[in-house]
Length: 150
Image (cartoon, rainbow, N blue to C red; front, side, top):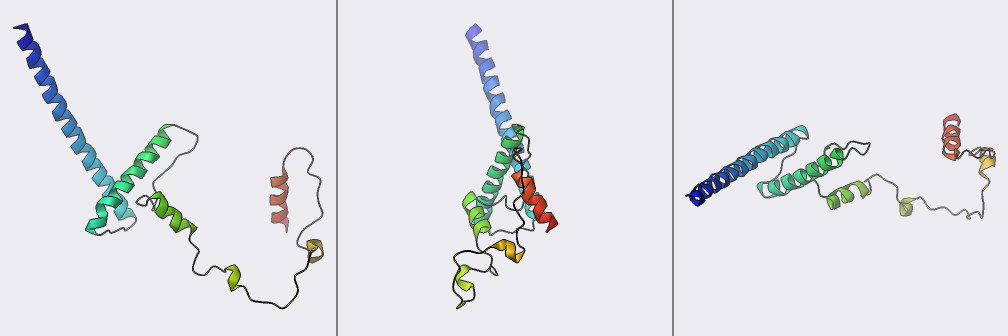
């Protein structure tokens, strides 16, 4: 008799766990779908049916990454932006691409003047005399202040 009761309890526990897991999965799916739709609306994004699932998965992967990093409290906070549906390689291509109006070296106008071996930029009022920065390691501050005053 005791084994039947123990077996019945196990069946109830297994059924409960299956129901709980299924219910939790459905809730997570609804939340994920809601977040995805909100994101698409915010950035006015539309995808073909064949691309929708891939973009949604990338968005959810990026969202999980953001949540994991933020949970570690490392002194900064990540947030979702308009690139959340892109893969790292797509984002790299997008941000490292040359802008259409950008001047390339081969676009520079040709000149017949000879290239100088050196230029004293002080005579062109481009730089100032060297200043004593002391030993405090504040070279970045000197250069920044100099830019402000020129």
